[in-house]
Length: 178
Image (cartoon, rainbow, N blue to C red; front, side):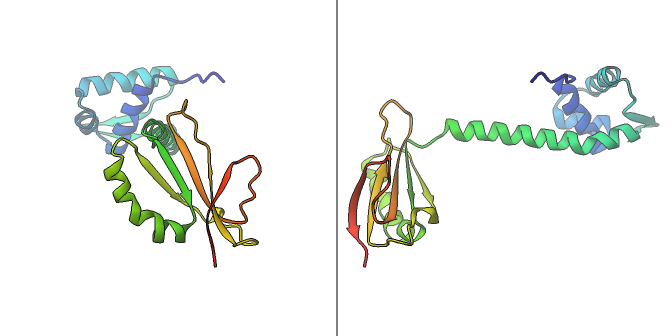
């Protein structure tokens, strides 16, 4: 899908100026000159074909058009920030992800991770606690399943409480549950 958008920098400047109702304060926040703010606002107004601010003495006020679009613009920036954060989180993905039931995680796994980190300092571990790892219909043992892929940056293991029958996965019984 092709989006026909004005320059994002101009939108960013507009959002800051609208939030502060001041070109000077927007300039200070963005570390640019007040003239640069004015230029970006003017270019955005030209692009959109509408006036965004009413200049009144030293201050500015939003026009109806600006007030109408500002909430959606802020939502858009929040979505962009969330998308960028997701990219950062994926870039920092753990080398090993362990998913396990909450009780197992709290009582058995977490107390042992400090020792593991000392022994294996180059392996980053991410722990995910999930009640989906419990098969309430067959609580007879704990099993481990894995998707260890040496070609991947990450590998994972799952600890399940249940019968140990997980089609498509290799499952090894760890211990019985009584």
